[in-house]
Structures are given as C-alpha cells and as structure tokens.
Image (cartoon, rainbow, N blue to C red; front, side):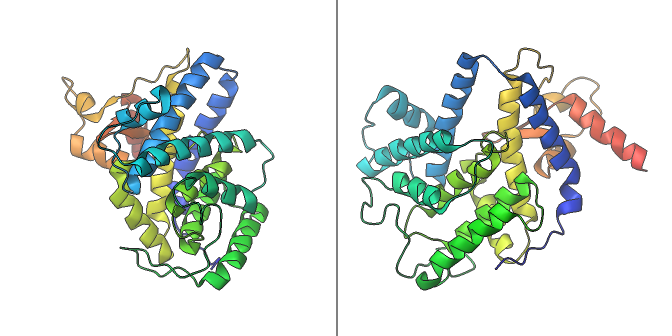
Length: 317
C-alpha cells in the first residue's frame, strides 16, 4: 500500500521551489490587516464549499452558495440536501481552522469529525463513522478495500503521514495522503469532501493556504486519481500544485506591495509586438512550467513569468 514511485520529483522541483518561495513571501508580509485576511478567507471558504460540493454533483452555483451561507437565503428549486451540503461544508471549514496550528499532528478523530460535519442532517447514521460494508466507485479503476481492513489502513496512513519516512515535502505529503485516503474510502458517503478538507490540514499547518480543486478540473481530477492508483502521481501532483498556486496568488495579490501583474494569457499574447503564441503559453501554464493559475476556464500569468521561463531555457541550452 505504501509503495510510492517518486519519479515525478525532478520534473516538479522548480515548481516546488516557486511555491515555497511564495509561501515565505506570504509569511514575511504578515501580519496582513485582519479585515483583508477575513475577506480572503471568507471568499475562499465559499469557493471551497462550492467547488468541492459541485465535484460531487451538487447543482448550486457559486452565487447561490454565497447567498445560502452569507445571506441565509433558501434557493427555490434546489433540494434540502443541497442546502445542507453547503452549510455542512462551511461548518467543516470552520472546524478545520479551529484545530489547525503549526505543530498540528494528524489524528484519526479529526478526519472522523470532519466527516461527521459533512454528513450532518443528511446521513446521520453514517456521519463520522467508518463504513462496515463494501463499496464500489463508479468510473474508478479499483475496488476499495474490504471494510474489515479500513480501520487498520487508516491508522497506517496516519502513522505514515506523521512519521514521513520518505521525507516528502508538505505538498507531496498532502497529495499522497489525498490519494491514499480516497483509495481506502473509509466512509459509505462523503469521502471526496472529507478528503479535500483533511488534506488541507497538512498544507495549512505548514503555512500554506488551502488548495481548492476546481469543479472545472473534475475530469482531470478523477483521471489523476486513477493514474495514482497505478502508481503514477504526476497528474495529481500537478493538479495540487496548480490549486495551491492559485490560492497563494490570491493572498499575494492582496498585498499592498504586490508588483505581479497577472493577466489572461489571451491578453498577453494579443498585445502588439508580443513574441508569444497562445497555444505555447497555455501549454506552459497547464503543465506547471510557469507561474500561472486558473479562474473559471481562463489561465492567468505574467509577462515576467513567461520571460523568466524562456530565459532559463536559453541558459540551459
């Protein structure tokens, strides 16, 4: 179960370094004004709830999710379950923030508590309880382990994360944990949301903001998990890095001394005299080769990020 191919490492080394530099820059700028921090956290929490629920089939829009959580409005034509899913996920995020600290150690009870909040008032009989029967996952290339093994596997995974025998960095550790917890599939329902919440415990304890897997990346996300089942972590690492970079950029862009001018790739390449082709720059963004992040279906980057990449390539030649 814990055999992990680290062949992706060389490809992602420069990306890891860039993300850690951004984290250091963010930590050096603190304390940011509370009002700014609270607004970013509030906005990210709504996005996190919307995207994570949408991946699982919830049909609330981002605006409807915001209206439910901030304005207490009931959305006509949407099911009671969908309203509960929005409220529950928001409460689970609050719980996560309440327990996180620099010396946080992953605990079984925290994963169960997050799951209990996710399924509260929806599946009360199963909320916060490990499954006692078999499950199958539609579209997945594996069958989760027998229910009798789930508790032991979960304990082994937590031990692996807390001892970190392979000396993985925080991003790798969160990614491996994410995949292995999906593979164990400890609950009858609510696994995906619980996994995406609890893996952020590992990122946030080390000073990173939460990584939010976007609804628009749902297909890529499931493909990445299926590849990880076969021992290939490249796509899942890439997706995690992109999600994390997006959150880091949201915080960094809110800094008073921020100098990064992020633009849509289409705007950068359409400027007069631009030497860049959109297809090439988009490929660099999608493969994590440059500092870029996604909003909706659009990729954003800076001219400086593209110039740096091209300059470094010339030097290597």
